[in-house]
Amino acid sequence: MRHDFAWRNQTDLLWGALSSGGAFLVVLDPHGKPNPMTIGWGQIGIVWSRPVFSVLVRQSRYTHECLRAASSFTVSVPAPGTLKDELALCGTKSGRSLDKFHAAGLTAAPAQHVETPIVGECLAHYECRVLARTQQAVAHFADADIVERFSYKEGSTHGVFFGEILASYTTRGQAD
Ligand SMILES: Cc1cc2nc3c(=O)[nH]c(=O)nc-3n(C[C@H](O)[C@H](O)[C@H](O)COP(=O)(O)O)c2cc1C
Image (cartoon, rainbow, N blue to C red; front, side, top):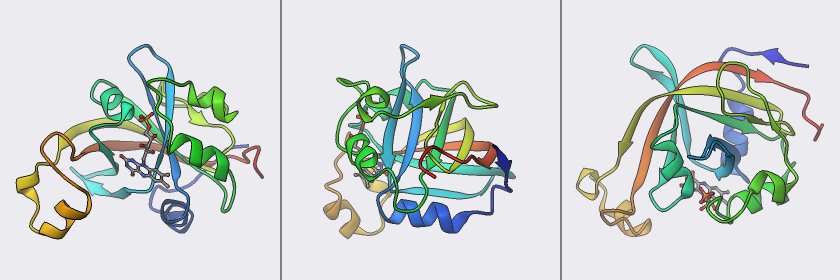
């Protein structure tokens, strides 16, 4: 059962997940295969007068390669305290060498507005259309501690991908 919510609501659920265990960022790879990656960083707000979900993906990730070409992504948020093993797998293994949906036993369920699927076992979902792809440069950082702590060098910074939120909703999720 799907229940739409305003994109600015449910932030406690989202922030709770991002700060403990993570959420799933899903993107289609160049072969059309969906790849789920665990994220702990993300921002929701208004950019270009639109509701936007921005995700930060390091250049070394397969997801980064996929997002450079993809036109959409989804973010699926587990119910609190659930899917810990699945989050750990999707946050340590790469879709370059593994079908992570299959390996984690997760369901790639159809989204409503984008071709990228959602994670069927999760509670809340955001469907996003890619608006902009940017790459952080070492010279952009005003705080040298960040550069050191995250071992940033040219070629190993995070990309910031801005997605217009086309839909935000909860589903029961098999984990409930
Ligand atoms: C809890 C958690 C949060 C993470 N958050 C991020 C993130 O926000 N951005 C990122 O680039 N990598 C993040 N990672 C690391 C990626 O999930 C990990 O490198 C993953 O294996 C990359 O998969 P891929 O190569 O299929 O894209 C996180 C990992 C964990 C365990």
